[in-house]
Length: 290
Length: 316
Image (spheres, each protein chain N blue to C red):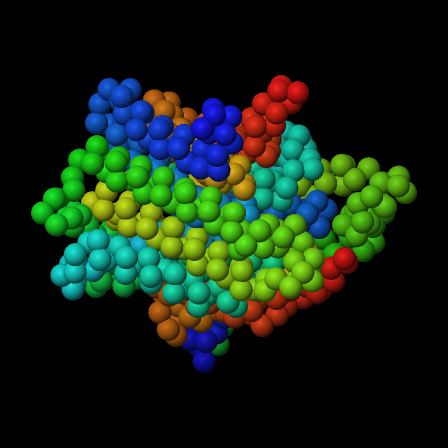
């Protein structure tokens, strides 16, 4: 029982990060139909930048804030200078641009920062909390709490504000949205900025547990993408559930079967789910008009 | 035969490519250039296969390095574990890849767009994970050395020998791909690319045609993987990894989806570019990313189709 609890807590922690990355994918996809493979780089930038700004004797919260703001700027620049000029290109070309951007950001990160692993001090100390025989890191709770806070904030924003409604309108029908006076370019700008910030926060939250380096982005992008697809691309609740599910499967496999094959089992399950439900868990089946 | 008829010949691109393969070494100052040339043709072979799938049938694969990995480890494990000759293992690997593609392709090719992308990505990762973890067979993450290819009494070594083998195989693969595109299957694939529903209405067995091209492209990748392993003499699970899959897709898109000549150009750019960029040391990755982005933004049809379009306008 204690064992199970331990695995659940680590699964949820990792899963929350996957969920945040998946949410970043979803947001950009909803606003622009683009799969942004540089999403993992936002996570890396958030963690790395906080580490390096904090090294210059800046208090941690300020460092985190600076990291989030700079990452937001990177997200905006990515849209303005790389995605916008290629408007109307085929989806594969747009994906290649985001992959090029992620290689570029990784390259810049290893020059500006370095190639070593870094960590951050945990938010609420490092003494594990004993709970039902399992030792839970306070930082795990910070990750879960932070992720839940972001999800709720995002939901409130989308459902309750005018700008949020404009995002929904844009994702439903871009042309119609433009016709009723929504600046869809601004909406996409905005979705890149918010995705970048979500990624940066995920990076800051997970760094005390999982360490960070210039190349952590690729794997996170992969997992986040898989989580978003598992939930059904374009569905925000789907991304959250997909992320948590992916984290849990990994933790359970690592705990009970083999830690070498945790990624294998995770992807095997994703394959099976997609074959059984081709539009993901929460995705709407696409009806093709002829 | 008049010059005109010769130029309009269907095999003209193949003849031109063969000429390039033969003439290029005249300008090679050292063995290093043969090495780069061999790498270009080996990758181009895999890219032609992937282009058949992506450019002609319109199906994405983010896991094609998995098939390269199967080919690579076939020629590495076969001779060591079973004492089989390398060339036989190469064929066995190709058949194995085709069979795996057949088995995996049937369910996952039903998926569309990004769902297909994540499914193929998952497949590629599974292959890489198995190769990493079954250390008893594969040497684990450090990889294993690959016995040299021996054809009868001739032990193939040296970059120039590999240049000719890879170049010849590429020309053969190129001609086969051209012929496939001109066959009923090729035309059916074109129809599927434009509209799957329309193709089905026309009586095309969409699932079957997709599966056919998936198996063919897996076989191309497998042969290329075997060559790469035999040529380098050493392989690691990275050769089946996600980044390698992305590299292959980048080559297809960069050269031009649906352009078989583009496959060669795309492979050449992405093999040669990192070699050139090593002079920039730590800026290498940043520049590579920047160049990939630049190509995709300004030549979004891919290099060859974009140039062809300019050329066509100019002729008018």
